[in-house]
Length: 265
Image (cartoon, rainbow, N blue to C red; front, side, top):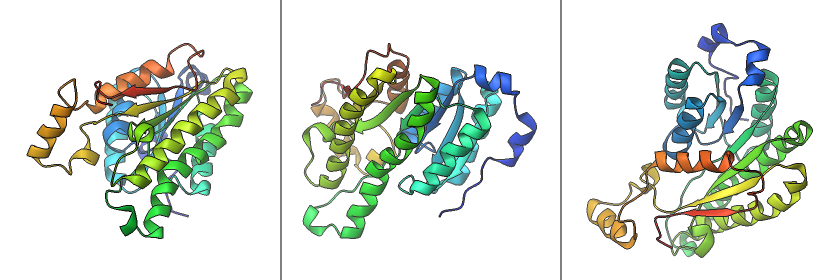
């Protein structure tokens, strides 16, 4: 199993009382070192959430984000480095989050990678890797938080999905399949957890101005923006605002795939 610190040492002197921890809500965000995940972390921190964040490789970037949020908002941040597709990594992260904060109010399944190329040229190893991170990771964390949310009779689960999960994209078959799986997973689990008043929703993002879409040159970016009725890419901060709206909506909103694409698809 990939090693990771249970929390950064410099936070040991800033641990809040148990009473304060239970007043502050707690959110787990996967894939939080940059892009949409980092933007959601900043949004929730600004609203007083304590955070449990993970990423696969960018430990320095994640630590810098944790330092920034702790200093700016006085919240606690736990950081973990590992592969969300590894069930035992996910289990340790969830267990340690519960041990430290006592509860998990929100799960944001954001971690994901892309793969561009013909399916015929894709190796089984590449397929398994993208499925493990993009889809199995959602299963791992969701399965693990459900018992705590059901016991507390509250909680919110939100997936960051893609419009390619709705319509598919040529040369992104594996990515589209994973996002389509997330969408079906969300609809089914929303029905399953509705009696427990735990909403499960997904945001199907269009083109977001993050590192994942910086593979395009300026000409390609301009052409792609022209295809979008809104005339531009969305920002990660806009996705974060949308995510906050969804997790604070009435719990009657569940099992929904909310398209956020500027009218594109």
